[in-house]
View 1: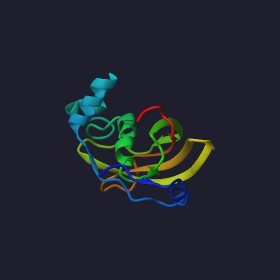
View 2: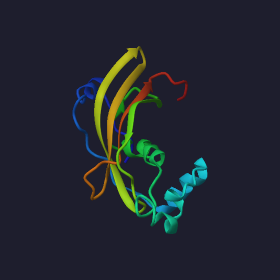
View 3: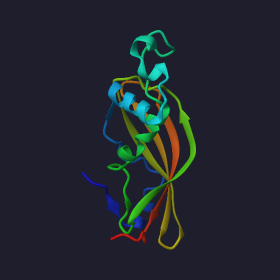
View 4: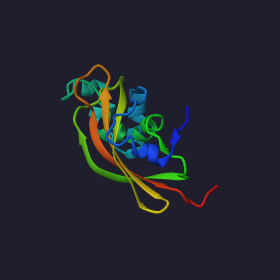
Length: 158
C-alpha cells in the first residue's frame, strides 16, 4: 500500500475527524539497540535487560525519541496528502508529551486527527496532525504530539 493522495478540498473536509489508525509496529530489543547505536544513548534502561529488570520499568524500554521517530512510517498509510504535492517535509511539533514507556517486545500504532489544513502560500500546504501512539494492550498512550508538515507543490523534482 502506498501513500493515499486526494484532492486538497477533500483533505480539508477531513479536519477534525479521526482517520483510520496505522498498523501495529513491533518495538523489539533489536530495534531499541539499533536506535541506541545511532543516537549514542546507551542508558541501561534501554539496552541492558538484566540491569533494567531492577530498574524503574521492570525491563528495558524504548527511547521516547525512538517512538517519535516511528511516526513517518506510521502516518504513511493512514493520512492522505494533497494529490498535487511533490514532497512533504517535517516542519516540527507544537507539542510532544511522552506519557507511558514502551516496553521491549510491545507493539505500537498511531491514531491521527488532522487538526488544521491551510494553504499559507500558493503551492504550499501546512497541516497540523494530532497523533496518539497507543501501546497494544495498555490503556495509557506512549505519546501524544501535534505534528506540523509542509507539502510543496513545486519541489524541483519530477
